[in-house]
Length: 415
Ligand code: FES
Ligand SMILES: [Fe+2]
Picture 1 (spheres, rainbow, N blue to C red):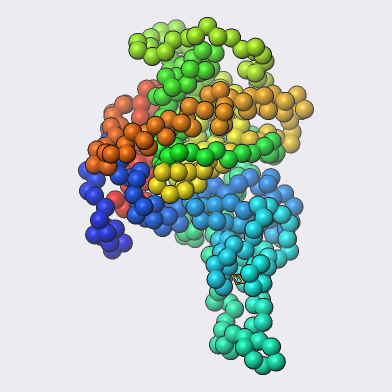
Picture 2 (cartoon, rainbow, N blue to C red):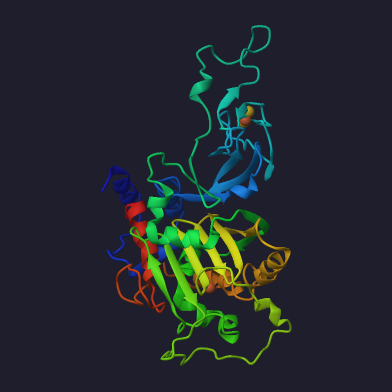
């Protein structure tokens, strides 16, 4: 345990029993937890998704994004590198880039025109020498000593990740070989092309959404659309992969139903008899070299790569205090797609997102938890499905990957 951890304890965080199966509700409610997460999780030794390289295709292109709730600028510089730096002027803290995206050789802060290059290095200070020998900065002022924090950047399959920790391991080692292979199976060496994006406001702590994406157990219970149209049942062939530190996972299924499947559907809602007015909503094309129709992949702390049939998306979580978060969705296809394939992807995009036939429930169930725990800071959630560990399992009737999230969280937070 390091000094910082002792400080946090003495700052008044309650005790948390060891293990991964009891998750106290104060974790989703306290401002001091939000602050500790900002420093230790998001600005600590983690890889954070910034966006797709396809969003900054040309030299000078930039896009504003976040690591946790820290504003970040992602820039494609003139040498072809992707750079990332904190969007905070070294003078008095204003945003340096104020447009969501654009193209720039350099960035001048609107407040007093301190200017930065594409790598986020401070290059000039307006009126540094004052006017006519009066005013200006002290002669000891060294421009090289000032500037926003720069991040380490890694690009994997056209996805840009960044870390405040310049000593962090490679993104490949962070994922581990099994998760890395599952990333590569989605991209297959193709060039991503953005199809659209939107932001979903979540009425809950970001960790409740991190749990939800790792919770394969809820899918065929909460999401009636899944079972009604037979997209995903727990009896289908599938499984869970959890990586070495627990924070990255894959939940996958293929629409192959084993002969001996004996789902216990007692007590859950049954098929409704509803039919789709346009059944082509679910008519996909054979895209992958396997029969996996659903793969949800997470990267600790706040990233999700989604493949639901041919609907591909990346999702970035941005905490907004203890009880709110923004979820930024970017749907994508590939430059190699035919127009018909793009059409299929756009149609299938209706399954997910804020009003998506499947995922609209995920947008509100986190709010149900946040409201349900309002008076129960000292109580705790139970995470016992599938045992006590955070291991890979052939069954999806498990909370193993959620325990994986908490394993990574505990070790990153030092609590
Ligand atoms: S705050 Fe940016 S130049 Fe003053
Ligand atoms: Fe869900």
